[in-house]
Length: 386
Image 1: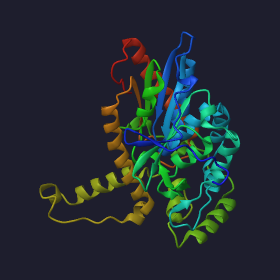
Image 2: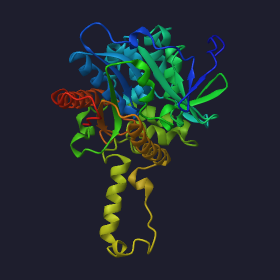
Image 3: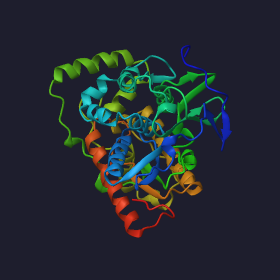
């Protein structure tokens, strides 16, 4: 913090504060290329954010110039590395990560405000980005975070790119918050999981948005069986044992299981997402107690959470996902984009970061399908969602 230039006083805008807000840069103005210019809003959604990579690739391939990007959480990360010209390097890295690789990148902490420091993962991103500053990017960029003290959105439009991204991805209870200039900053998705508003001033031909909280699609769930198992079981067992010893008194073991999809015995959990497990349990209980359908208030049920493999962190994540899904609908109603791409929220578990190749492909497929409809109708009024 000490070597970071203090940004200018924040300017209030639409209930948000802009850190070092700057005028729209040259990258946000329509270019003389004959190509349509796009201001792109990238939503939050954990590992589903890898779909943003595929969406950006398709836009470029089909002749659209991205002149502005706003994002929060994974949207801020993917948008930032693209703006810095490092998207291919980032893609090469994440597509090479296996399940065990992701687990080894977790730097668990005994800090009560966050189970993961995030430094191991973010050191790689920081090395890719170097000393890049937002105002030096070739396009307009906004990373959205949330200030827990002022209860407001914070828009980063100036300053070190890596710090803006780190603040935007600080998931409450999981990744430790960022303290900056008197603010306590966490994931921007708490208030704005699909930040369309920062793109409005870009003067682009079109505003596109990629929402990672789309309705469930039974055909798009990525099966765990599609991934190669860990080959060195002894190494895995030893590592998991060490981490569990360290985390046994804290929240961290819940986090470890959620990230890796592992049961307590080190066996991969292939039973599905926490939502799917709970839905199946509810169906089973309804079949066993048909009277409950006639009088649902007759008695309260119980669930063996351990048997289902659902822990405190899974419940917290379900809570955040529910909140974000509702917020997305409000944001879309207030600022409808010209084109909306929906990535199903059940494509994978939120922390399946070892599934980058498949999620990138989903992003490609969804963007192709949305653009096909958009270009066929020759209309830019109202969202066309796929």
